[in-house]
Amino acid sequence: MIRLEIKNGLVFDPMNNIEGEIKDILIENGKIVEKFSAETDVKILNAKGKTIIPSAVEIHCHVASQQTNWTRLLGSNNPSFMKYWQGLTLKKIARDYLKHGYTFITEANVFPSLAKQTLFNFQHIPVLDKAFLLNVSNLWPLELEFQKGKIEEMIIFLSDLLEKTRGFGFKAYNPFENENWNFNFLREDLLKQGRLYNFRPIEVYLNLLQANERLNLPHSLHVHVEGYETLTGKKNLNVLLDHVKSLALERKNNESNELARDHLLHIAHGALYNVDGDNSNLINAVNQSQDLDLDLGMIGFNEINPVMTSDRRLINLLEKENQMPVIKSAVEEEGDQFCTLRTFSKTTELHSIFFVNAIDLALNIQNKWQVQFSVNYPNHGDVNDIPTLIGILMSADVRKKFLEKLHPILSEEKFSNIHDKEFNFNEIVILTRASPAKSLGIGKIKGNLGVGADGDVNILDIDVNELNLPKEINILQKALSSVHQVIKAGMIVKEQDNFNLTPQGHIFHAHGDRIELKDTELLMKAKKDYYKKYSSIFYESLTCTLNPKILRKIG
Image 1 (cartoon, helix red, strand yellow):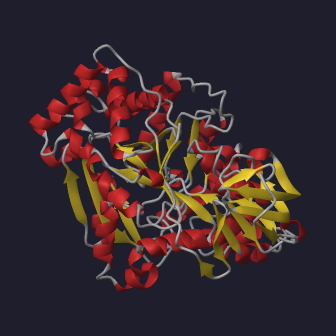
Image 2: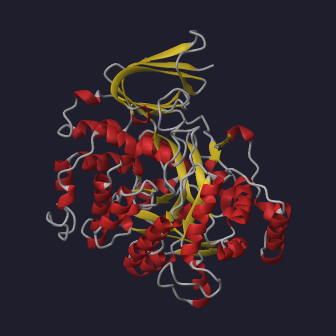
Image 3: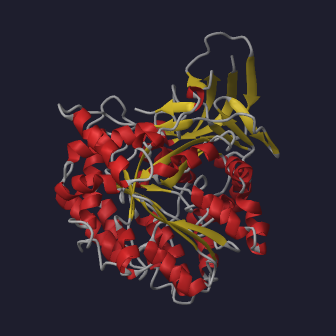
């Protein structure tokens, strides 16, 4: 039995409205408790003069997929990639996340037939808890349901698919865009019907949104809107926001879990849609509705970045601009996937706009529980960029000096709405810990230091209340660049420069609130017959078998 007492620490725990209070944290059998069941075998950590916060939560990354392996293959012949990312090995990923206080990560794009690859990688990522989102927005077996809006039939199949693959939630990503392989064109927007199917892409988003809510999954529908990094992306995002608002869907009241999510739709890497630098529509949409939240997708301006995507528009754009090798693939019945390499530059106008967009969204979305920190790791940035980016959010002076290095289009007048505002430390804890956990629907156990939560804790070797912030932001940045002690389920997994990579961590999964129709068996038989007739795999072959000890079901 493991008992750990963290005494006299300065605690920041936004989930429980604790902002800089001296408190003790007790952990027994991996959980935070009010008091120990016995006073024997207690390890005591004296945290006087130190700051205690929940461990960080990653809401959007790409670390465990077939595309990640392809990226390693491309990068193996690129000296810059090998020098900076060191092969992007699973152990490096785990160490870097732990170094910055993370104990939970979310792989954001996995096709059902490739889930076994992701789960295999998950089992070789030490310590961290993890989950993945299934990309089902190009799934041909659901063609009839998308066409006719058969939500009940859709959720029966999707719930079964989640259980088979051990998925956690759903990703909607460029619905049925892969018909480009047949006709060599890209549709204008989400309202244009395809040639191979009798419905519009917007209907896929809306049907999946309704199915996700009927299932009452922990996380909302997680969307990547096609055309991001272009004006088409801005147009499509606005179309989606308008249609979601018109749908007037209400979030299911979850009285048993007050820390569950409030929103219906999560927008991935929100900073890269408004290529003109005008974020007003997106900011207003979020500020006027609890139904939306987003992660930032901040840019780190690294020496080189991998690109793992299913966005055909983006890969076509990069192929013209970068002259880097590209791997392209169509996954049978499920969609496209691509990977390449790229470099974000501070002197490139568009890249500078994306960087400032993230700051604009972070500072001007009023409810910080509707925004989450991310760098779309490793596509936009590295977790090692986090202290720098936090400094930019917390200090107007640091921000001004950084913006001076960017493209001259970023005049002070054009972006005057971001120059004076600053995050405080408690808001940073919300942005990196509490808000991502709540958005993922795991706020009762992650991003939280309340009784019953997992014993995942960061101890910073500074007293934040003694700092003159933001003037002494460099001291906080140093503390965040290598968290003094990282505790996972009551076990110290990082202390100064020493790591304990022995624990395995859990794989979180969910299948939602199932429903039964009188013809449920007939429906599932039809889906299985579809795979027999049109696919090279059987539906049952999607079943992923894992050691139950490493699985953790949510909901």
